[in-house]
Image (tube, rainbow, N blue to C red):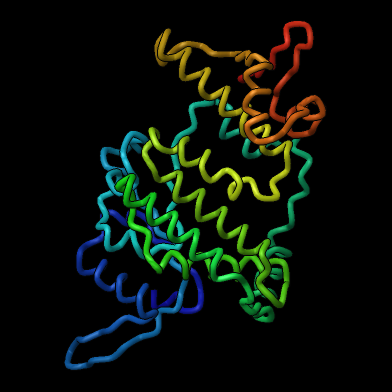
Length: 301
């Protein structure tokens, strides 16, 4: 971490780290320095770096029926430090990995060299000032803390508020803004909520998603929301088919009743889904609308 001063430190297999090393990590995260006492020399070295740590779940597979803390061999003390916690799970759909790299999405990728220069410029030259409502953040903090206590998940502390402010500043930097706006705070709020909800038990995840829907869907494109709903319905259908016919069942196509899709869309206050059927999101994701049967068909390759 000392070598990564003012940079990024990547740590793999974090769950297998020794207690002594974890103690040093705690100090670095709290004070951005590491104390050394060796051969009569006592000194402190700078470790001002971003830490990205990856750990394996207990048993080798993430159990969505348990909380994030119950899935990893890490103490609650450490879990309170990261700005964001991500639970990466294997997707049930066979096409999920390929979809991430689908060239038909129509999105223009920024060259890596250009993106690197952009980030360096924003980091070195843009220093946005905070001018936001404290009441809004305090209200969200209180709500999340209550949810944390009720669900028995990772504790929400004042550190999480500081994390959200840092993410809001980072969002403003990426837009080359001099001030942190409400949009920046909303984006940071959405990221924090998504991380918080995704680390919950599956039994409470949907309930919390519904409760925080206004914050999660702030300024998101309707087509993006509808695609998310559709993929969730497909996922549920695949799980149902495999529970009936076994995990090895061949699910080549999935048909979703349009009325079920429309009902889900209405919950997000989206009344007209017809334009979505002609959108890039719908077509590039291998969906097909059958107007005669009023079903949405997904081809799984």
